[in-house]
Amino acid sequence: MGDERRTFLFMPESAYGPTNNCIGIGNALLQRGHRVVFAAERSWEGKLAALGFEEDLVDLAPAPEEEVEQDAGQFWKDYIREVSPEFRKTTAEQLETVTLPIWQALVDGAKYCEPQLKAIIDRVRPDVIIEDNVLAFPALVTAGVPFVRIVSCNPLEVPGEHIAPVFSGLGKDERDAWPAFRAEYERTHRKLWTEFDAWVQEQGAPALPDLEFIHRGDENLYVYPEVLDYHVERPLDEAWHRLDSSVRETEQAPADLPVSFTDGTRPLVYFSLGSLGSADVELMQRVIAALADQPVNVIVSKGPLHDEFELAGNMWGAEFLPQTTILPLVDLVITHGGNNTTTEALHFGKPMVLLPLFWDQYDNAQRVHEQGYGVRLDPYRFTPDELAGAVGSLLADAELRERVAAAGADIRSRDGVSAAADVIERVGARERV
Image (tube, rainbow, N blue to C red; front, side):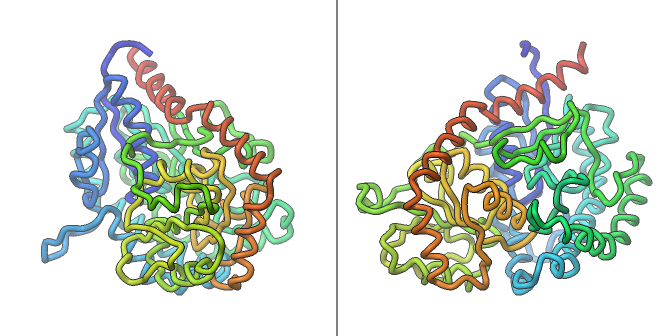
């Protein structure tokens, strides 16, 4: 791609999924000799520098009066713990009680950090700015350098007439229900979007697409395997580039599993509700109880509230686990359906049981289910027999396991991280010709 060293500025959303995605792509650029700077949220302080990146961090809200050290993404962990009772509602009901408040918190953060971002851009002087988020930050598109957008949530985020509305969890065969959901989204979100769009334009940025909270980029990347993608129903133009996966290579240390988990005597299951979903302790306990007497071994990503529940005898886990080194070892994944875990599970060719909680998790769960790579269950209404039955049937389905494994081999061969780095490098080189 050329020998010139360039500066790439990443701004990921604070949760682990988008940040880990940017870590993987940023590491590929770092290995090619470029300068990579993260304008991440401040709770990531020190964690990115340890991986070789520069940090120039932002606050999304005023600092608390008492200085306390926060875990990465702590704001969203606290928020999810508070709002988790709302996850028992339908996706349409969640639009007002879960989705809208999340958008409001994101909007408040964007407004608060706008002056900080302008100062960071002045200091860093990037050649290209890369954002992995769902929300516009005007400073990123008014900096006078190319802007690359990454969609690391479900690609229904980019709307189309012939695909289900984002956040709905509605299937491709439920078209009759799409208009009502879209109408409810309009009712609940039009006011906030109108106010935010006006503020974005006041900062000198272009108007936002109707009812979308972020601009298109000069180039756009989205992370989703072709076997799940909506590209037939909703084609995208040549400025969009699919990454079938984006799996970071910065997790080098494998988990120190018990010998009984690696001797092949029992199927091995990985259970993770993500850093946010695992804050729902009651749900974690329900899944653990349902699997406690099953003939499987279970690796559990326990999450931030790991000390508030106990694992069963056929389980082993920890607060944090190196997911990308564990997934190749297991036979099945039980997940909340976050885009990061969903795409990584398929990257390694693993079938899934999906327990969606909020946001795009419903869309991922539905898509995996209807495309035949796993089973979607209601996380608050499944019976122990239903969960055990889903696990047992997926493990026993040799044809499915062979098909998922083949999909994984194809995904890995496409090397999404390198493909993303190629696009970003081309954008930087294009501007210097």
